[in-house]
Image 1 (cartoon, one colour):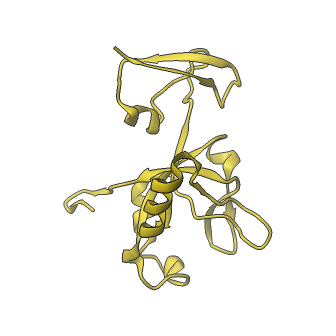
Image 2 (cartoon, rainbow, N blue to C red):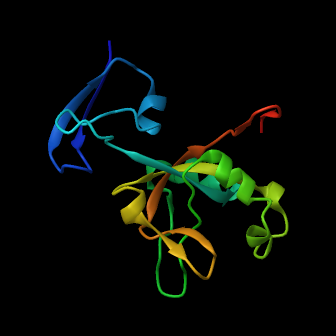
Image 3 (cartoon, rainbow, N blue to C red):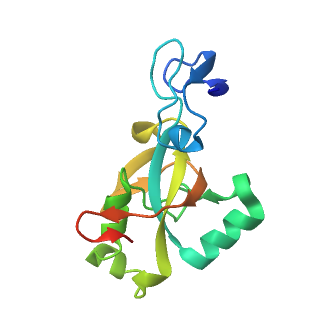
Length: 152
């Protein structure tokens, strides 16, 4: 039995039913579900930093309605990263420590980018990093694997 997904492809715009040989929701989150027409990923996953206690509470209470704020007036949007490791390493950076002095209270969370990296993020000169342009759904808290250190 495999996973059947009905949805609109973010690349070609067609509605399709994609069948995968996996029941694993992880495949969906990791972008392994492909469009039946153009064979591109149906979902784009990125990573962000969030206050652990607040984000876990938000995920529990709001579930799929819990989102990371994109760019609005006077707010450049949340930080966004292509990999979990980039996000975890950012917690130790001077850039992060300019805003927060307790990095251990923060964690890496995955999120959906509806239109993909190039359309839903931009480089913010203010934050000197990639930021979220469009408000996006937070999926879950991520564990980060560092070679030789293990799971963090």
